[in-house]
Image (tube, rainbow, N blue to C red):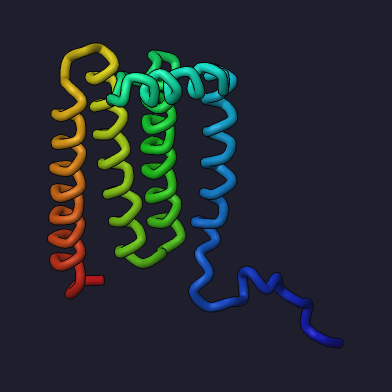
Length: 152
């Protein structure tokens, strides 16, 4: 009797099952966020049209800012859960640190969008803080991966 066939997705070397599941989870997060914070396409188009007419950047509508703030918070929480799943599955630390770095960055992004929506920072500061955040997360992830390379 032949051995039972295993799924090709599971058998392939290098396939990231957790990453595939994350794609579905992100779509669910997107849909739930849209249900809780609906943004009509006409709102977005009006905003883009106004910017085109005035030939300058205008602050996005509050509904759009709220949508993205909650979306990035939810993605950050999901990234932490993914990192925990990877730890329990004994997956490589590089992937785990990547998930944690992604969570840190998306938490930062959500926080900054919230501050921008509340008029606590300008768009210039928002962009600068995002760039600083990218640099910080890259340095932190590289340092952790370097420290763990000998042990794991």
